[in-house]
Length: 121
Image (cartoon, rainbow, N blue to C red; front, side, top):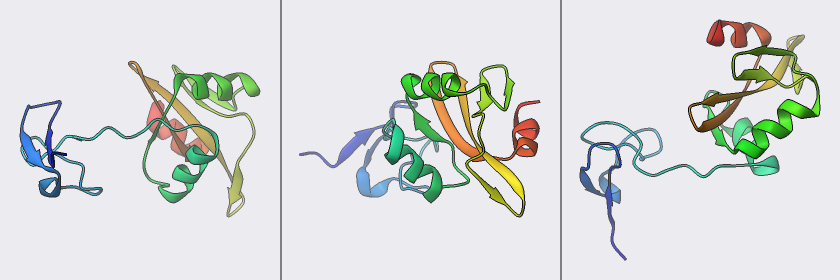
């Protein structure tokens, strides 16, 4: 088994141990992710969102549509929406699961209405 990976963005060949970045996933030449993150659904997705509250977590088209259709969105701007029911409250402020579609990719992150408006308005 090879320890070498090729960056899909710039073609740089690196040893896995030579990758840099927060999760040692970034190309040393262009700085973009080399290894793709898995697309998560349901409990693994919720766990990843809780463990990485400041990161967008990749998810599936199926999960995006499930969450869009389960309840009317609390707020929707373009292809970005907050699930209709708050996940929790922090200091009395409701926090929702936000789902976003960018191109052919889907991602999610927990945020307040204010954070949502700041990100997408």
